[in-house]
Amino acid sequence: MKAYFVGVDESRCKAFNALGEPRGHAEFLVAHHLNVGQGPTSRRMTPGFAAAEPKRLRLGGAPLVRTGRTRRMPDLVREGRLFRVVGFAASHRQLLLRSDALAVDATDTRVEVYFGHVELMLLKPIYEKGIHVRRATGAEFAVLQERHDLPAEDAAFTWMIEPDGDSFVVSGDPSWREAAREFEDPSLFDFSQPWPPDFPVEHGTVG
Image (cartoon, rainbow, N blue to C red; front, side, top):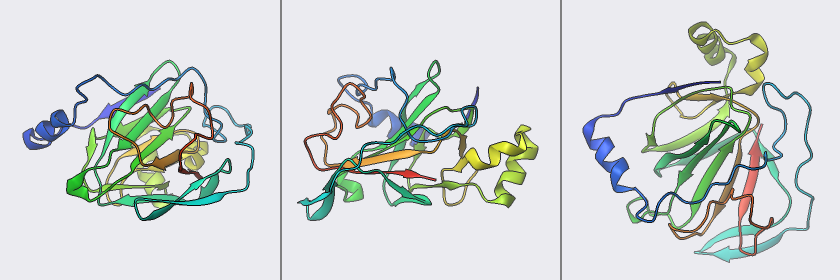
């Protein structure tokens, strides 16, 4: 597993430090792999969450779903809100990005994006304008393949992070969760907590 990080200027560094959690990092337990499908070195499918009949709820004026069903979609677009890297567990090859509710972004939910079976990543610590997670196009993968000596079979497991940019992750299918949570609340991917939770949550898998 290899990792690359990109330097940021002083203003972005200060913004990142200002978001530091005064009580320490939110708990991110990595004792179990999330069942999100194939990974670049684990080719078989793993079972998803058991399906349940969704119940529509309204929270903060926006509909959220309390459900056991994971929605699969070709991409995840969350623009206009700040995301940051909040956790990486090298021993379990797990990466977590998070966007907390911020008044400046006019957001009232937390969004977390999880990558399992990580083989390679090129990341910024902060994405100020949001993210667009999707599988790399043929042209994008060709560039990354030449730069990083990627095997051809990794094309199906290479995920771009930004609408325009070089950030990417080679991993299993990304999974995301969104809910109204306080800043100090545990991660939505805290695997010690019951799932589905007892609060409204949207969730899905990209791939």
